[in-house]
Figure 1 (cartoon, rainbow, N blue to C red):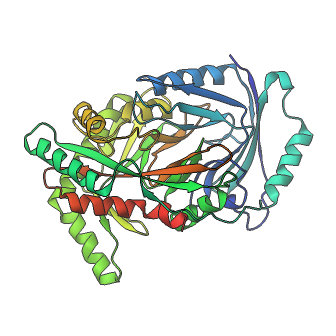
Figure 2: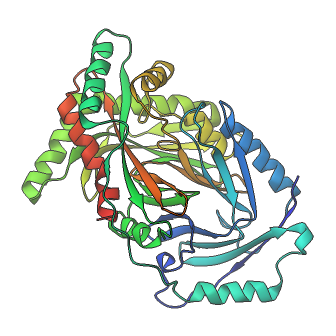
Figure 3: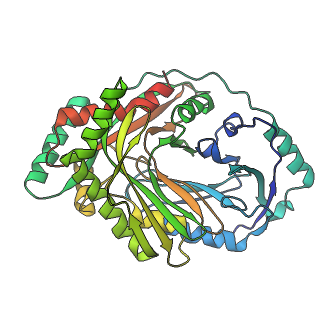
Length: 422
């Protein structure tokens, strides 16, 4: 087992310091409203595939932490030894699930900023000079290349084919084979060989500041959906299911929000998602509570029905253990889960990769935050001629679903990535 040496210290950030100004090339990012973690470089990498991919990574992470020497003067969630993770949606995906341990971490939360340095034990740890040198880098804003414009087009699932699949799913549901299934479609755009994602990522982070901006091993986006958070024994999650586009005027916008909150179709879809999450979390929690009624959550381009869930952790399970237990939720797969996953495999003509899988971070104590990889894409680096970005958007199909309306919903959900590359 690799042995790592870790040091975390407070960092006296300059006035008006912003985390978004300090992203490295090929960044590791998990930020909301400018707070969270940024990773630089790579000190270690753990990968897994198959049905037990997340539980295997959780076990290997505990072993890595047990072997590490950690000097953490900060003692905050996200200080000390940290890994950023991105998990494949399906067990048979060609995409690896991965935990990446950075070489340096910048943390910023609740008025505190810190630096963590991570090195192999054989390197003798990080010298004070290295720490001070990185602190100087962290003080000065990075210079990013201009944002890249990209033209996204239908990929393996055309708009027409998607509507046919939705109609087929509705027929199954009405035949009582299944309650709900989440179907997605994909779009793709070419990017230059020397593509630098940072300026485009900052665009997303600023427009969707109330979402979690993430970037891990080529998977990136601005997710509105917290899968699970663990902090000092407290568990929290947020369920989003039920969607409507924002109105152009305040009175229209308010009417849309009210219609969403009272929609039988959307409330039914939402209840499936909440019940599924509570059932999956219950074995790990001493007590668990969910909002009695969903609330309307406003994003710049969408309204969502949302419910918050709170719990108290029962044992020493880590945030990744809980993410493994929760995935896939009814919000990204359907109900019943096994039947929904089988229908997704049958009707979607592509491998979702890490889309709709957990993405986030965890530390040596097991604390961490995991969101669902939504409203973003996967960067694939090609040869010298360039690379590509594949983006995904899906919606929950129930008995009342209309194929044309579901197609329109996917277009709303593509808005964040289209606007980031406009």
